[in-house]
Length: 227
Image (cartoon, rainbow, N blue to C red; front, top):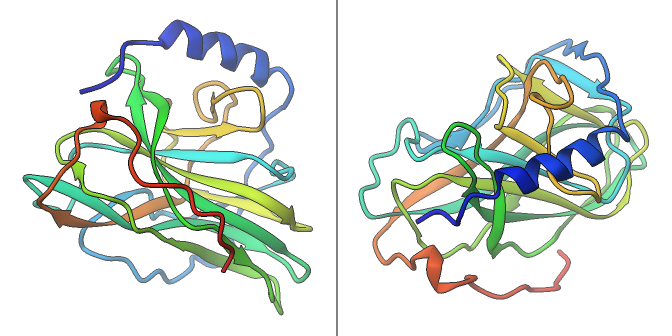
């Protein structure tokens, strides 16, 4: 069950936050990365463009995980096993990221990230020896979420520095699909900021059979352990 509509609140937050940044022009990705993907996933695995000069540090990105996941036949529940986000990284990058599963709130025509349902252990990314596109994969140990519902996958940049970091996107851009929160609330990168592509983010999923309804509250605990 989705939370009550907060579309007006979301729009108010986005209007304030969006004024602080201007969307960069995407640059071509010189070579499409070869990705190891599973049959059961949700999100965007297309990678054709880079967005440099946007990322600034401690911020979060969220991607809609629609109820109908291609390749999945889960009838009871789904469990996120790994969260993925493609990034262009250069030597000197030292960042800590974590993944979260969020509710989807608002009107069905424009869902937005809601409350946190589960959170991963933070993962530290460093030791980059040459520049390139990297699949930042965050292992998840999330409980079973109800199948047939919309969710959001979030990647939080907890701390660190990354000279030259660029976001990766691909395919057509869809409003209300890829969101960014840099401190003033969630902002729709395509619908409000003019990004031409959805960011390349996806979740590997498994079917599960003992779900915990979202209305019972947050799932799991927050583990402040760095790998």
